[in-house]
Length: 593
Image (cartoon, rainbow, N blue to C red; front, side, top):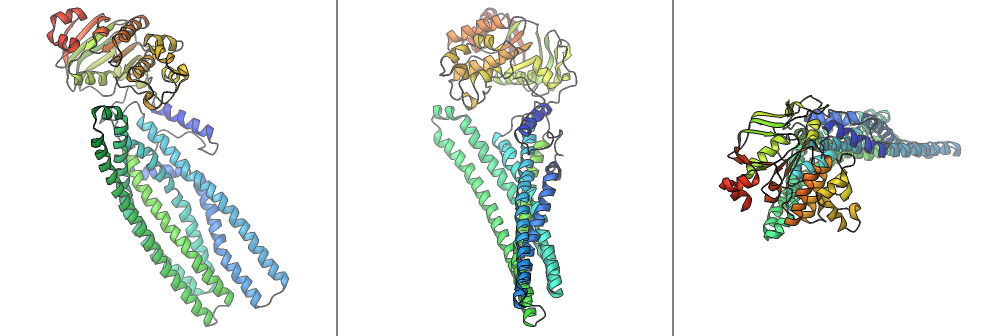
C-alpha cells in the first residue's frame, strides 16, 4: 500500500470527521499536535475546544447561580406570607420564581450540550492525533508496538483526557455557586457569610490534596488494562495457530493472568475513588452541618427572620452539591493527567526513520543498488538490481531476509552502507515518494475489513486492478465468493482461506505497480499449480518494472532471470536457479528440501 505522510492522513481523517459532524472542530486538527508532555497534551486538548469549554462554563455558572437563588426566593416568599402581604406581591414573587426556573433550565441544557462538545470533541481530536502517530510511515524506533497498549491510548486515554475538560466546566459552576451562596449568606448574616468564606478555603485545599493519588492509581490501572488488551489482541490474531497446536489452555492461562492483573489494578483505583468520594462527602457534610447550626442559632436569637433562616438552610443544603462536584472535577482532572502522561509518551516515541526532502518527481530511473549495507545480521551486503529485471533472493537464515526487507521498506536505518535507486539515496527521498518507488509486500500483509475490490484498489494505479487480479490468480478467489469482488472478507480477511488471503494481498501489491516491487514469500499457502500460474502472471505483468522475490519457492525462482544466495549476511553466490541448485549445497538445501 502506498504510504501517506502522517500530515496528509491526519488532515484526511479530520476533514471527513468534520464534514460528518457540523459541531466538530472549526478547522482540521493542526499539525504538529500537542507538545509531547503531560501538561502539553492537557493544554492542547483545552485550547482545541476552548470556545465550547468557556461557553459551557458560562452557562453552567448561570445555572448554578440560579440554583443557589432558588432558596433565596423561597425564603422571600415565606417572609411575605408571614408578613401577610397582598396577593399581587405574592404573584410577583412566584412569577420571579418561574422566570428563574426558565433561565435555570435553559442554561442547564445549553451548558450540557456545550460541555459534551468540549469533552467529546477533545477526545475525538486526540484520537485522530494518536492514530496519525501510530500510522505514521516513519514508524517507531524500537520496532513493533503492543497493539493493545496503542488501542488503549488511542481510545480510553483520549476519552479520559477529553473528560478532563469537564473539570473546567464543573469547577467553574461549583465556584460560581459557592461564591453566589456565600454572598447571599453574607447579605443575610455577616457571621454566616464569613463562616462559609473562611471554611471553604481549607475544604477545597483538602479536596485538591486528596485528588493527587488518583492520578497515579488511574495511570497504573490504564497500563494494566492496556497489557490485557494487548494479550487479547495477540491471542485473537494467532487463534488459528493456537487451535492448530492445541494449546488453548495455555493461551487461556496467559490471558487470565493478564486479565486478573488488570482487574486488581481497576479495583485498587476504584477503592481509592470511592474513598475519595466518601471523605470529601463527609467533610462537606460536617461543614454544612456547622453552617446550618449557626443559622438556626441566629434565627432563634431573632438576628435573622424565618424566611432568611429558610433561605440559609436551603443554601446550606444546596452548597453540598457544588462542594462535592468541585471534588469530582478534581478527580476528573487527576485521571486526565495520568492518561495525558501516557498519550505524551506515545507522541514522544522516536521515529525509526525520518526520510529526506527530495520529492521523487521526476522518478529516478536506474538500478536499485545496495553498497556495503550492514543491518543486524546483514554484513557488508553489495547487491545490484537492474531495471526491468526479475531477481530472486534466497536467505536460508530468516533473520537475514527480515533485516533486508526492513532496510528496503525504510522501516529502519542501516548501521552502515547506502541504498540508492537510480543513483539517488533512498533515504534522501520523502518517505511517501520512496515507498511509491519501492514497495515491499510482506509475507504477513493484512487485509482490511472491506470488499475484495476495495482491498485490491486501495493503492492501485489506474487500469491495473483487473490485470493484477488475474496475475495473482485472485480472480479465481472472486468467482468462489457469493457476491464476487463486492464480498466483504472480514477483519484481516478472516472469511478467506490462507491461500485466498495471499492472492488478494499479492493482487493489491501488483495493482500499485511501483517501479520496484519486493515480494516476500507470496505463495507459501497455495498449491503448486496455482503457484505456477502466479509465476507466469508475474512475468507477464511486471514487464518494464523491477521485481525482487525474497523466497525459497523453486517455482518462483525458476522464473527469475538471476538468483542471489545470501550467506552469513552477504552475497554468497549468484546465478540461475538451475546453476545454484547444482553448484551450491546450501542453496539446494534451502530451496529443494
